[in-house]
Length: 257
Image (cartoon, rainbow, N blue to C red; front, side, top):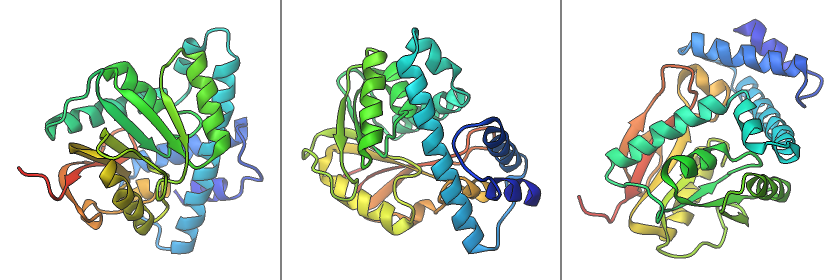
């Protein structure tokens, strides 16, 4: 694991290339193979998470542009190397939401905070449930690319450029609000997003928050489900296979049942 981390930290640049792709693929494989591995150096962990976040952003932009330019955009989506992981995670999240008592369909409204330039979570939510998706991201470049991607895929959805901690959202509107793994780099940031979006939820709405556990925190910020307050935990999931993110499903404190 130390060798793999050194390889990632030593990359001279993080845009997609054979060298970069191989280094991060090895890191992901190592994380899955050694789920309990832990980095004691907090500064190194932070720097590694930042590198992973930057590399993921560059990879998503690269593939968003590739899909937009493709003659067959739907086929191009299927060629994205991690699309099976997105589909698997999103399918499990839908099941967790259903177990919590909310069923998504064509009339459901879902907002995703930190949707990015390649919103595959939202894409699979739409493909599986037909839900109406609102993409929310603080990066204008990401929002613009995602808009073009949706047009290329003939995907009806809406977009908002704004910070999840302050974005203007309609009250009592969304059945589910997702908070992406890279939306907010600390528990305090996640909490501010949760507090801000709660009024936009319907009375029986759900908040889905992604985290990480064990060695998976090398890739994404990690925190326990109990660290998020002002909500009630309904479902908690930690993967043991190739899927990376943990998932927490919450409801409002004021709800009954």
